[in-house]
Amino acid sequence: MRRTVATLGAVAAVLLAVQAPAAAAVPGTGHFSVADGPFQLCGLTNVTYAEETDYRLVSRHRGPDGDWTFTVFTDGWFSFTNGDTGRVVTVTYHKADRDLRILASDGASRTLVAMNNRTEVWVNDLGQRIGSVHGPISFTVTVSYAGTPSEPMDDFWLSDPSDIRIRGDWKFDELFCGAMTASLT
Image (spheres, rainbow, N blue to C red):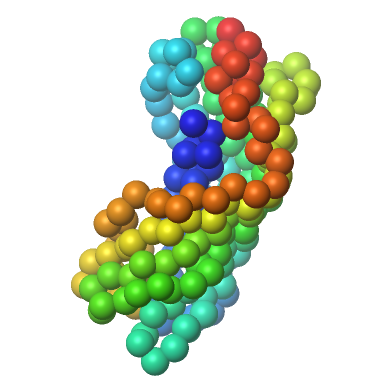
């Protein structure tokens, strides 16, 4: 469960953070905010999500085929709030999302190996640490250029991440729902 949340969050951050055309190849900085919910989480039915993230984007041209790769460094926080109890779990994080290697490109899409390396600290609304996550996740994903290889903002996934590899301290992955339920009720 937690690996999926982290992987999807990594890629969502990359896609949300890219604000300028890749052709610019200029480091960019910015901020984004996310609010979502209510939704179900670990058996709780009225959970909302909020996030505030600062980012720095670096793009690199990877060769004569015109493909670009990206690295996004982010610092921020996100929280889950149980609307029924008002209880909150807040996560502060530092992470780097990197396109490591382009495996294939046909002009319409590219298949690449990506990595998300993060440090997260999870605390409840009493300030008690309930968990942490350290270390990288790498995965393979195919992304469509949507007809504009130099504009990453319109890219979309053609495949779910595959070959997910976890390294580092991800014990919290197995404890996620128990910790969330205990902290939000």
